[in-house]
Image (cartoon, rainbow, N blue to C red):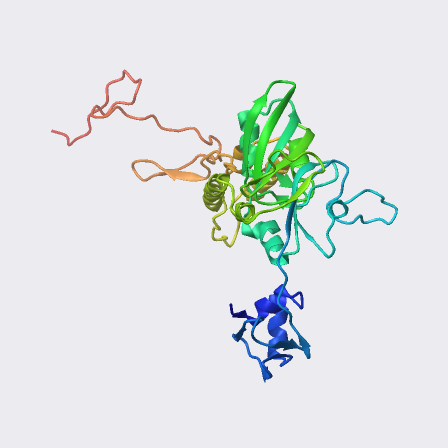
Length: 357
């Protein structure tokens, strides 16, 4: 089967697809003796493809392993030379480099997939592809509905706000609870950090599935080779992805209304700086878990301004000017009752004005 040259080069480990395109543009790739160009295809079982004079061989069949990682075992080589902890790569008798799909910290356990298919590992691990991973999390205490909503909407960490996720309580009481957390991203110790911020520290964390591939009945430390059907399940996102996308869309709409840019006036309104300080302080409290999202992000109403008292001179009904500087804010003439010509509260008869008879 013919494939694009850059894909064949990436599958052979020569370079990434983008770098392979640069190889082709530079004239370093030949197909059946002819200099290749972007868009050319080839079948390695029939065609002779050479990169810098070296022939590409048909890729060997990919391997896919599932392992139930125990605690205190690393998913990648240790960073320090004096770290003698075992890695999952040492638990599988495979020669050659393997990529890890879904890393777990040393304190966590559960499903890890190892493969030599780097393209698939990238697609299932990178947050931009929104692939799901589900965890069984034992936490201290019983999270309230408000806490679950805040967790699912995304909690602020040092590197930014988490993506929306799906969290349900399997069982729980005031002492401890079991949660199922489905996520589309995997920051360092993310679940543990979020649970700690929300006041429910993690006691135990186990990954139960990647996509629709379940850990099943595998015991700690066991591994097996995946079948074609299980590889298909691995590539299929969990059903909770629809709920996560729906929540993310609702949050984007809400934040869009709150964050709609307004035209900046030439001179900011009086009190605008004070309101901005109040709003930023609310958001800092929300990041520390001391403020709800609703209170943190709703607009701050400016304080009402009292009307200024009248100053200077005014005109009465006859057009005559009066000086109110000594009696600011107090009327100097009494109001008349409508239709009577008499001031309110006055019992004296009014003199009729008219021509002399």
